[in-house]
Length: 302
Image (tube, rainbow, N blue to C red; front, side, top):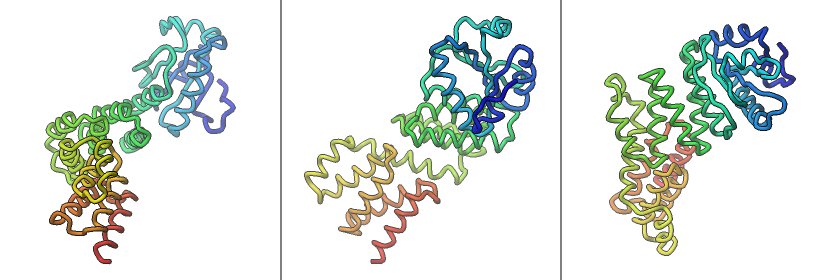
């Protein structure tokens, strides 16, 4: 068994063989998930998939390990796994293969696969494994990989049916995918033990704001109106809510702040009320929310 010459992946990525397969894969997977990459030097797609898979394993800082098997040198294992073509990838947990795929995959699909494997690990420290999966799902959301994040959050909730962050992530993913009905369905189906938890108040507020924005025009149409009529504060407010529904809360806050700079009590304080709704729908420690509250205070007490 040889460690690959990569300090970042030291101990996480191994070359294995028939002689060490039981130790490297079967026994090791009883401690943490092991992803096995069946490859060969002559396989073109393997040269792309292998490094991408290695990078994703390393990025998860020990939540999963990877073992590489050269099928030319280890034909017996390949036959036992009934591998028909390569690259072929299998995930082992508790000594058994639990998931896998054959053929080339995109970086997003590779990331999604690794996150699902991590989320499915029953041997993880409860906080450790789920927190790692949640961090990765949050990263996916921030990078615009909403469908992939939804898959990971769903796996988290499947593993821990009362996980507040998991449910919140599922709802946010649906909102960012433009699936308001599905988001409402998740809220309606929340387990009784958590449905009234105050930690879910922000995401419920996001759903309410998205429902309100649904009755307005598209971001593009509203931007045209605001450009042509800068003092049309109703259109500006609707644009802010439409942008917020698309996940662009920073822009939404700035638009509403601009209205307040010109008319603090416009429409009986509606712009201020909508701004506070958006700020309340965000994490209290979110830098964008904190900045928005500071600017609002400056306007009010100027």
